[in-house]
Image (cartoon, rainbow, N blue to C red; front, side):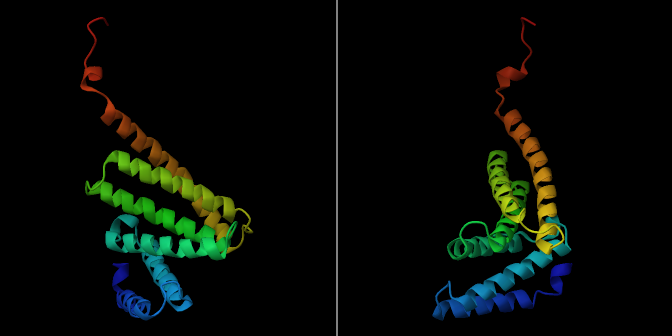
Length: 181
């Protein structure tokens, strides 16, 4: 399991965030740096393993951290921003991975899964629209290609879940053959 090697770092980062957040403003640069580092460690865990194998609490924590960092980035770097684009990408990947896990454990319905996937699609498109300004040979350019592939796969999944939701909404009367036929 890839997360065994860094589990000592994650609790230490969490403890440092908790300790410093108690005395400093939660948006203090030191606290934000710790949160960004923790989000990066969680991202590395997610990349090192298939999302189905990553514990949900780690995906959920990554989602929370990305949301907090995006709030700050939108204020500090409004408009088209490389960092905001990367944050949006990471947030939305986490969003749909958490939603999938919740659906698999029946914590959310197919309709709620669809809503989360559609929200993720919108955020991913926003991220791509910012990343398109990056040169294709840079790490951000490579992320753009990956995000476009993720968008294609996400749209396919949305179509499948939408079909599932529609089939669940069909009334039993529609399933019966008509006498007139």
